[in-house]
Length: 461
Image (cartoon, rainbow, N blue to C red; front, side, top):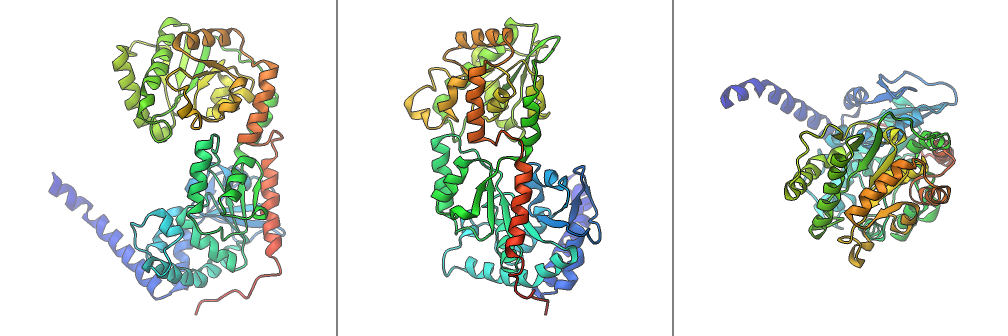
């Protein structure tokens, strides 16, 4: 069977090897114009409904064209910006960037070396050759599509770094819409700070982060000066923030509890497993005790396999079986914000969805048992100093009692809701729902800031 499968896949392997060799030959020959049609086909445009289509030829007067690098890595930012009048958004898949990068740079280096190669190293020389190539190729690609600005989703995505830096030298601003803003504990702040210290200083025009806490870490890490980093909120929160202002108690025929699970690993090491087991086992027991209440556990898709392994272990050690529990659902699909608005009570730990739930007025119950409520873990717990906004259970019995009480009173108390609003604005986004307009204004300002200062566009030899 193996031999037959090898024969069946051989043509595909040959085609892939031929295409790779052809790309390498064009790159080594600096055949910019021959490469242009290949990369033109890779670029797509996001329409106002968030769908991908062929890029429109030409553009309207006054329209700004933004090219989003690493298109797969954002959290809806390009789609939201594409809905702003006067902004056209093109996207380039990360794999097409990597295919160029690997023509010059050997794979297998630590990411920090890609971002900040050791002085005098072979990697530094390889990246210098890559940037020389980009200075010849990118002007043709940008001119063909009328690109005014380049955006990226993260400050340390190495497939973006060289393209962004070269674009900046060509007179097109490179703006990072930084997607990771989870500095919700002193442990995370310190970890991000140390990571940024390993990088070269930012080579673009502007970094946009969600909150002031992340902005302070960026500046404190020495990665960027304070004039080039702005805390403008989170665009994917705009509509949710506005909907929370209109939120009413759900009218479910059956009460619903939505649980966002936490995970063992680098944030919480192995000694917290007794807490993991106790919290999850208590939730399962609650579903058994309250067959009239629907319990939905929603793990993150990228962590589901690892979480499920720990969850199954917790059930086995607790002697529990969930096969016949019709009111217990484990499903990572669905939009978290939509599920929050449909839930009567939200529970979990180590996730901003708890702040989102509180903003929507939903009662939030946090399991925080004695196994984890110790000094050595305090710095690792997200927004721990805002726990007074929620119901915090210190043991399994209190967890069950708090869930019952929250189901009976399905709207967060006004004093707690005000505390949630303060925490949400500090750690997540602004409360005005205007992040999208701020992002658009910042991108336009970055383009205006380089207008009139562009050197002559380098043409292909």
